[in-house]
Length: 197
Length: 182
Image (cartoon, rainbow over all chains, first blue to last red; front, top):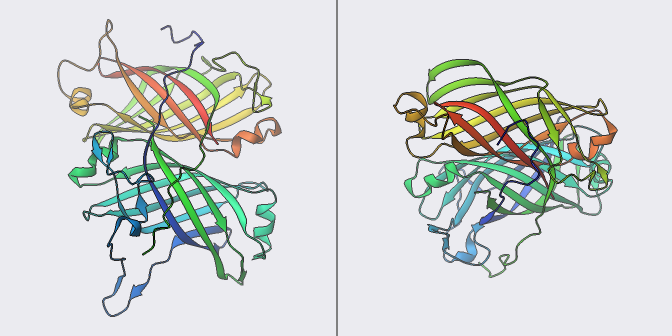
């Protein structure tokens, strides 16, 4: 192909579903940005966060929507999100927020998978303005379009480090209020993760 | 524990936005072997890369489709020892209407088994003039601009699917399709 010729066809594109994660995050105002983080109970005696004890696949926050244990030729990812923190900023007065953050997944085998998240949250019309009033009487819906990159040393999931992924999500900022930086909103979020290769 | 876990997929859609083919300058900054891999900075030949709609359409989501030129661009790449290439690209597009769009993206280039060694040390090198090595690149571009004509694009996360051509372990050119996630 002559690089200077304009193509008249699109390159092949495909995506494959990998896993989903459904969580409830806490949204707090941090200066000019909003922070989304996972709140997990903390055991002060043991100085550690409390992880849920899984007794069935229904208990996992990282799961396969169809309950499958295999994706392609690999084991499906089941486990928990044990850490997530995203920082949302609104680059203009519109209803789209840019996000950047990290997430740690612990698989049911105990593998830790580090995730770098970037993307855009699109709030419903006038959602940004309502958020700016720092008190919500009604929920604000938002859609998430995320890019995710994974890192792990665990042999079983090393293939994830070579896999470019995207996430399509939905979230709802629940009612509540923020006063002088204190308080916040609960945000149930659901994301489906796909690989592009 | 309850059985209330979600069992339906969320909606997803990709909207094709633009394509571009990049000719890369012979000038490159080979930083060399750093902890974790090899770092190299690569630059696009300025003003020689067209941005266009591959299917010839004039609109995208009822907005004018982008056509223009990449006036500047570079990739600050790290080829990791585990055969993963990480791209970190910034480029500037000037449209045919003289709007300026800033594009930034990080991405992934799986160079395949022994890709790192073939790129760095081993012979034969990766790709030849007769048979260039063509690899897949995946990116997550975001656009910024003050132009109201393309404000719609700044409110979306995009993905880039591309192919790069390597000859004698040197990246010669790349071609990309960019989609907005919806």
